[in-house]
Image (cartoon, rainbow, N blue to C red; front, side):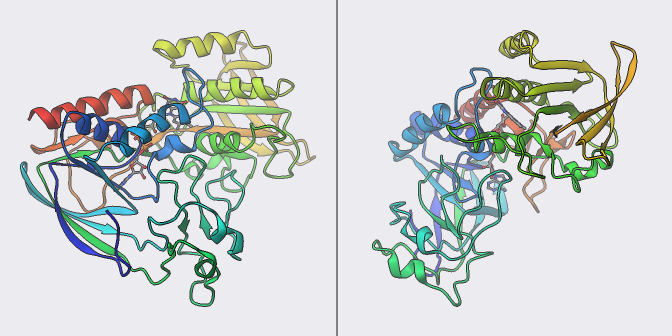
Length: 417
Ligand SMILES: Cc1cc2nc3c(=O)[nH]c(=O)nc-3n(C[C@H](O)[C@H](O)[C@H](O)COP(=O)(O)OP(=O)(O)OC[C@H]3O[C@@H](n4cnc5c(N)ncnc54)[C@H](O)[C@@H]3O)c2cc1C
């Protein structure tokens, strides 16, 4: 399904709509399609894959994200029952189970499906985008969003593209894929069921004022660190401090940064402990000379992830300290960031210097603006009006394996009810 040159407005009738094209939405779509049901996935970003597509590696097996995502992309490509729209967001949902009417807005698509990802447009593009997301080298305004982008097509960042005065990409494209005049469109869907798989975004770390995330470049969130690792664990690449470009020697991980705290997120995000253990082990593999220290209230690693904890405990370059970090301050004598923490097991107060600090910020659900849905503890409630089925991390924090299981269950519910 392709947008026409001036954006488009058309109506489709499809049994199941899935909102969100992360690992959960993709899983629900494939399971339903392979059971014979037609589905449509809408994703607001220009690519499918969600948060996982930007990861460096996955716990528990520590494999690259490609190992889970690529096989799913292949299943989507080979199944004509799955349709998907990227750059698409829900504007309105009305009706009842069996007969929902859904209005979806489509972002203007300045590069269409004829793109072969040859990269000529980016070669001639004169405009640089800022590092987005953090840690990745900046890209041109014409760019491929990440190494695992699906569909593997270039996209143009309209916010920075200077299309009024420049059409260099249009001149070099041999495939007639550039359409700088494209305008936004709308689709109207008639669907019987809706699966919500809108996922999560990280808690805003700048709200934890005592950790100085906003004004200290060497204080980063766990998601930013994940992206940073993804861009520097290849051959000839180095992890460098954002502030001065020098390799860090000591890195601190602060668990529950904003989580389990009535002033911020009252709940446990369930994946942050395993994510920090994964990060520290990745550092130990790639940079054995670097020291990591994980500060925690309780370490919550369950099931297969307990093996991560055992590996950390037997890795000499990683230490685990029970204690909540009260404050992070810049050492005025140039010694890096000083953490004030009470080491509970040793019964002492410490003031220790680190080169970088990673905040294990929690998961906040992505909610669809303007569509009232039942809520539970700030997430989508498991029970909604008939025909609307929430799946995975928009319902509660969970890891990839649990998200895939929950999304499969949501697909099954859509088939059964
Ligand atoms: C730092 C960190 C590291 C982690 N590492 C691991 C790990 O190693 N192993 C592991 O098992 N788990 C890990 N997790 C957890 C993992 O990220 C989640 O389990 C996973 O992302 C859940 O996938 P999802 O599809 O539910 O959500 P998401 O990945 O958030 O995908 C949701 C998708 O929905 C889209 N969307 C949102 N709103 C709309 C809308 N209104 N319209 C259209 N589209 C929309 C989003 O753009 C996104 O593409 C980690 C989490 C963190 C914070």
